Structures are given as structure tokens and as C-alpha cells.
Length: 400
Ligand code: ZN
Image 1 (spheres, rainbow, N blue to C red):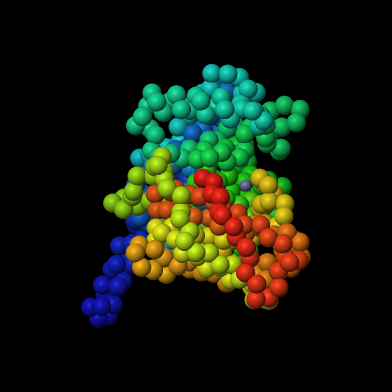
Image 2 (cartoon, rainbow, N blue to C red):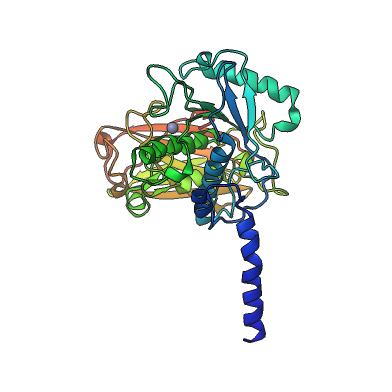
């Protein structure tokens, strides 16, 4: 064994204890196996607030600290590995850790009965009480983003085998998910009733958290989905853990500018009130018979995504918007040119490609998390190869 080999073996040995030490001893064997190939994250500047919220008349589900810690850490690894794969480094939403290796989950008991924090209308009262908690305990608020988990209701409709009744959606920088006794990583990927139930609720947990971290719905181009599976922010909430599920380049570009993904020492102040709309100096959307070619010029700080929408793109009917991250090239005077070629063969799952109305959304984001969206609607029936789509004056709205 020469010196180089010796150093190489020694450094491998030195790594083993620190990697295994990262998975706490009290975690389940299933979690230890799932987290064995964990990558070490860059140190986050901000962390996700994780809240377990109950009514005044119900209690957390048994062993929630361990179960949810395992699920959150596995999900953090999924996000981090996808960010790394797309070239953004080993970054994920930061989590506040306790000395025992669990995630610091803040337990808040609501003032009202649990039925008053229901799916339909319960989020307002819940968020009001969480905000009051953070006002009284400002050191516990670690970012603008809060993930709220509530235990399932137990009644004629809901229970251990059919959890529900509580809010389950993203709402701005807050998002809601639920807990039930079999919400446990040991069921992940298993073709059993518990395994299928876990994918439904853990996939939903992963997807709603994406919304709470700024992500809009988006699907991938046909060739990408064929190779990589289903995007988490498309219908990946139904596949996560059971079938290949991934983050699109668009989703990762948005997370790159999301507060809890910022790295210590490189973090701006996020979500300023005075964010300025993008100024698009030139925009061309040309149709060449096989593809749409988009080119625009705007300020250099914006990351731009193009989403191709079918005509029914109202809230929660936009899961199939196909997302394309635009390529950025610096131009003069602090400006840039962003371009993308969108072959129609990549839009196979959309309705109305080549006939009727289609929408193109352009999403603009800056490193401090400011976001703007604009929409261009056109009709294929009046579009011939060689034409450019009339874009008119762009109207922006804030957020995605
Ligand atoms: Zn969604």
C-alpha cells in the first residue's frame, strides 16, 4: 500500500463514523436504511418552521417526533439531491435540528376544538394562532415559510385508514399536511394498503411543501418525463415513493431563489415589499412549424421560465403546464437575453397543441425571492410557420 492509497483508505474510514452518526440511533431501521446515502447539505441561512398543530380537545399521534423527523429528513434529501443534480449544489429547505437528531417540531395546541380547524375553513384560525405564537416567541420563527401538520380527525368519515378532515394545501408561504399512525417511512414504496396510503399522504406532504416553498404546479417535457418519471409539482404526489418522481429544472430554478434554500454567507434579505416588475425590452415568440422559439431581453437578475398551458389553466387545473427553463446570456448594460426552443413533440400531453387557444406564461424570479408572472394567449388556428405570436403589452401579477 503506497502513501496515496493509505490516505485514501484513511479518509474513507474517517467518513464512515460521521455519516452513520448523522442518522440518530433512535430512528427506525427503515429510516436508517433510507438515510444511509445522505448527502451533507450546505449550511442553510434560514430554516423552515415546522409546526404540529392540534385542537384543544385532541392530541398528537403517538411517536410523531420520530416519524415526522424521519419523513422530513428523507424529503430534505430528495430535494437536496434534485438540486444537486440540476447544478445548484447540495441545498434543500433548512430544518432546525434538536440535539437528539430529531427535527425541532413546534407543538402548538389551538384554542378551539379540532373540528374548528377543518379542511374547508380551518386554516385562517390556525394561522392566526401560529402568528400569535411567533410574535410571543420571535426566536422560534426561522423564516417566512411555515409547514403545519395536523393529526387526522376521527369521525364517521375519517380515521386511521382514511385520514383527513384537516387543511391540506399550500397557501402562500404556509402549507398544510396531516399526520396519522401509519404515516411512517417503513411503509414507503411498499405495495400494501399502508404503502399506497403513505404515497398518497407523503406525496401530498412533499408536494404541498413545494407550494409552501414558492413552487407552482408544473409538468415536464415529454422526453424528460419518459426518462425521469413524474414531476413532484405535476402529479408526483401520486407517485412519490412508489414510482420515479423528480423535480423539473424549472422547479429547481425557483427553489434556488427560495428563502430556506439560501446558504449561510450568501443569503439576501428575502421578499422585499418594493420588488420591481421586470422590464421586458424585447419579446419574440416565433413558430417555425415544429417548435415555438421564445427570446426576450430583460434585466440580468431575473431567472425566467416559460410554461405552456392548456386552455383550462385555472387554479388546480394547471398541473399539466409544461415548464421550460430559459437559457440566460448576458447582454449590455446589466441586461440579458433569455431564449428557449420548445419543440411541439415535447408538449404531447397538452390539449390544443396546433389548434385552438393556448397560453404561454412567463415566470420571472429574482435571487431575493421576488416573483412575477405574465400570460400571453394566442390561437393556433391563425398561426402559420414563420409567424410570430402577437404579445401586446405584458400585464404582470406578483407571485407564481
Ligand atoms: Zn398542488
